[in-house]
Length: 249
Ligand code: 3PY
Ligand code: MG
Image (tube, rainbow, N blue to C red; front, side, top):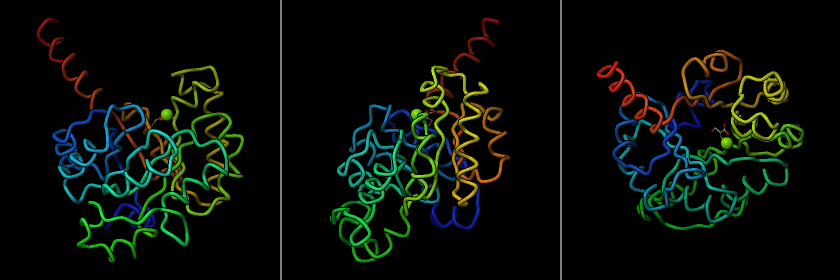
């Protein structure tokens, strides 16, 4: 079952964030049991070629959602044509922007996605099959991570075709002048405003945290179906620091 079907059936999908352009890390992380991997082209140095190599290395029963560097028709088209199951779009602050995102992610007549034959379409071998199913099976995740997006949440939610509203607690806290204070009451209040709006229209939500302790409260809240915990670089650093601490005391 693909990620979108699992989301629609009510599953909670656990992932981790990959910030390094490494097919080997993608290969490993796709084998440890995560439902999906959050591949970050917004902050990571990855280009489209590295993304393709990462997706090729992953186990097929682990999904991939790719965060695009910014909203652009070509970014969204390429990421989907390379074979991501969906896109994550950072800092969406208006309904107009959300409409453009959905339009770039869907083939006509629902949207304006260009038609090509790349990896997602089996380089042409599964062209018709992919084209027929893509609008339904592609996941569109938008991030609310700025107070402006919080203020616009009702308008943004009126846009057809959004599958998940994903909170970015770090950017959201920064937009409030509280960078990194993800549990500050003002940040929580902003998140609760988004939660309430999403719950009213049964919109699934997502959350990112660096540790299981930081995501657990959200994991247990109603509606949070896309959970991202930890990063590849954070894991490597923690492991190395643990080794040194063990050896040096
Ligand atoms: C943030 O916290 O700003 C994020 O984008 C997490 O994915
Ligand atoms: Mg962010």
